[in-house]
Length: 587
Image (cartoon, rainbow, N blue to C red):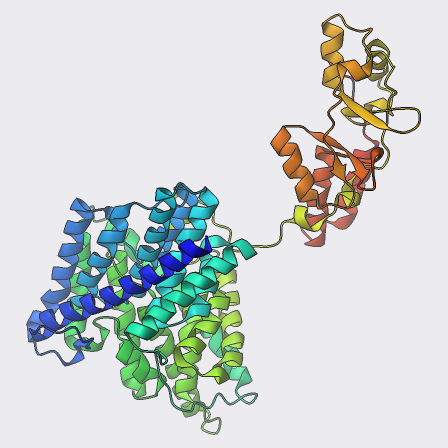
């Protein structure tokens, strides 16, 4: 898996390089009528009114590609990658790896207000998925390879290997295991190395010496966190409300991208900085190069263009535009507070860096990744503490006000439940000894089935305590197990004089007192049995406990009590009742 992850990381890094320069080529051709592969901003174009039509051309091309290529190119990448995980066993068609980067290049190159990162994330995920399908891997392995490609895509685009790994864990894998962490790190690191070799090794957004003013500005960072959380919720609701309104028009989904692109063109005619990824504009915000009025205009226009475009299901990345929105929110906040309270001297650049990560982290509920992300993009370690403060406050506010993220809302509407928290499996944390029943009824090998059946039918508490009854010799040696069902079959077959050892099973599957409950449960599922005698590893013939379904459920009950979901006294009462409760006569 690590070797495959390395290949996927390098391949995704090269795809990012090609896509980046394809976007640059289209931008130069469309806005400046020249052939060049150097990345340029659309800000200085001289197209005049023709600039309005450029995004429309890109939207029309997306419609054509969606119709004749694959409609899976629509969207900003992350929900589509996650949907493949939850609904299609991590299978993504080869066509996505081809058409997604091409469609994104067309949209972004013609002025679409997006970045390349979303398409690269989806393309990298598609590459990983296709590799997994070709090699006939398991679903879990395909999911890991898909996540490796997605992490590599993010890392290669921004030079952020740590954030790429964490994002893949938080959004796509929802697990933290050694088997997945190592390949993720390999893919992300090599994709970043490809970026460093082919493009540049410095920070994506170089910033000067910023004053984060801690601890003096601590209260203002708290307030900024609340603001960023509210902006994130507003963004999610606005996006899906806009999408709903466009659906009510009943237009062809292949025409809709052009409709949204027309609105982008009109906005871009007046404010050209909303065209394209806007990496130069983000860098200018972080370095406090804009006035309050222009920042406000930029915030409103970029936000509107983004909502219009994504609301019509075009192809493009979400990170860059939301970064611009978040940076503008942070910068505006600092400038406004400085005006209201002149003595605080907040740094608009510092607050822009923090806002950039907080708004996006709260929008996608990948808080940890996007605490690290701005630090990796700016190489400014001093930003870590305010990023942590603002990031968790913003995500907390967003979580309270709106349970779904911009990634999971789309899937929730389609009936998929996406867990947004992950935790250690309770079965892996609890040993068998903690839940097993130590009061184990046993029978001797020479007892005849008829006698046992009479005791079962009479409801004898000891024998009826569990469905499975260990068969133990007089000297305490475990030699077999007989279930109520085994006894019933023998009786109905007219073999009531059989011994319980002959009617039961001599091949006994065991659970061990000190092993994790998880291992015992896997053994039960693998052999399709519902109970296991518990022994000590030092003496495999001495029964020390009994593990059945009731005992397994008790582990989950205890976890619910720990989390305060069920009152502890209720759980204790229920567990005590289960221990006393007999199985009852077998019909």
